[in-house]
Image 1 (cartoon, rainbow, N blue to C red):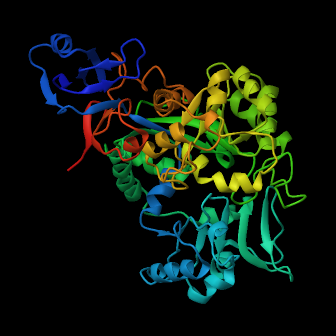
Image 2 (tube, helix red, strand yellow):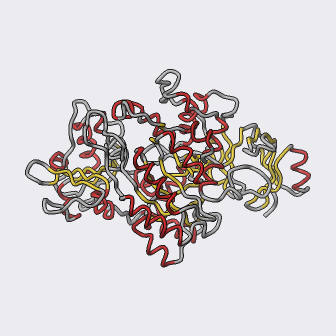
Image 3 (tube, rainbow, N blue to C red):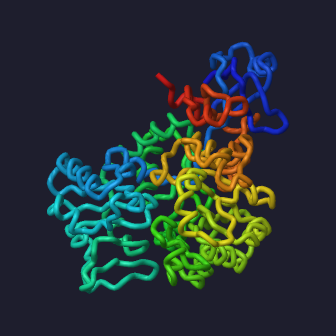
Amino acid sequence: MSIRVYRNAAIRTGDSGNPLAQAMAVDGEVLLAVGGEAEVREAAGPGAELIDLEGAAVLPGLYDAHIHTAQYAQSLDAVDLRDVRSLDDALTMVAAHAARLRPGAWLFGGRWNSNTWDPPAQPDRYALDSICPELPVALPNVDGHTVWANSAALRLAGIDATTPDPVGGEIVRDASGEPTGILRESASYPLRNLMVSADLRDQLRAGQEELLALGLTSVHDIDGEDCRAAYLELREAGELKLRVHKAIPMIHLEAAIAEGRRTGQGDDWFRTGPVKIFSDGALGSHTCHMGESFAGEQGNVGIAVTPYEDLVRLFGRAAGAGIAVATHAIGDQANHLVIDAYEAIGRTAGLRHRIEHAQHLRIGDLTRMARLGIAASMQPVHCTSDIDLVDSLLAGHELASYAWRGMLNVGVALAFGSDAPVEHPNPFAALYAAVTRTRTDGTPAGGWQPEQRLSMGEALTAHTLGAAYAAGEEDRKGVLAPGKLADFIAVDTDPFVESPDAVLRTKVMTTVVGGEVRWQHS
């Protein structure tokens, strides 16, 4: 393959020693030279192929540090209830989607948010049964921690009045003890195990096109073993176009250890990631584990999905086998216990342990995270989506919420992502949220808890080098410098020059992964 020179661009390299360049030479999958056009062309030699980027701004490929790519790919052709504002409207959309499905198919999708429904309504299986008496229906809510199921789905999952609540979960029941169809946290796992698509490889192939079009060149995938198998098939077939750092589900930890999996194992296209463990639930489901009761819900402090003693045991087991740990923790008590558990096992050479979400922390726990080297894998759009929820449910709690600035100030490594399909995977929406702390309509004026805002450079670093660092890959990607992978995007908006509003509307023109154009705006 001849050396290529990408030229005529404002290249924001992310490299503090060489922050702005005009051209880059690529040899195979690796950057050969980055700098002024004359010096780059000299380094490339006379036979180099010249590619004109037509004055575009160029950024390192964006890296989503927490995304459910299988769920996202499946959601592209599933019912989407995110914008629904009443139970009746939700049922109308579900019925219309059901009419397009073959007999016996599962109806998936969801992302409903009953906190926004008017009039207020509590979804249950009987409402779904009225429109889908035969097809099994399983609809996760917007935060993914509650599933709304109909009677057919409950039957297939073996859930009835005699089924006990599992550890770390709740089967919501009516006054007579019958399941209502609402399953919280681990109670939904039997249904999730049935929500497996035979078409996942095809769906992931299509889904990666959507992600490449958004400027994503690498992902930390948080989905299951079926997703891992499908990605390996794509890799074997030469159809994988973006780089995957693949998490291990907690329930597969022992099998993964027996197989000899280790974090970092693999190549630049597909590597084994950390084991994903749940400490608590989510704010929208009122199941994140808090040190004090939710406002107006005396006695409800959420759910400890994995008890502390089990956290310590699992952390030690994984780290001892060379597998990093990524732990979901949203409430302040969950985060406190997770930090305690990481402290109990001590640092592990060569492994980067993480907290996923790290949304609401006790102020003193920020410095503990930094001291223990725990990375914070966070999703900026969660902050702006949850403003009203935080203000209502956590009123009176003295916490550091979505404390990006506070974390950077004490030395916590930040890795940004989307948690798609909970939020849209558009990384430019994340950059906007991180620097403004406002919703896309500009509210609240001046930003919510604006002292936690980041600069655009800091936000970009968290979505590139920070995500690579959390995966132990900072020597390969995250900045545009000689010897690094040639993963970059050309965009129509320079985020260092234009306003946050303009950055929010950024269009990706070209996505290059491994020196090859993998997606181009038509």
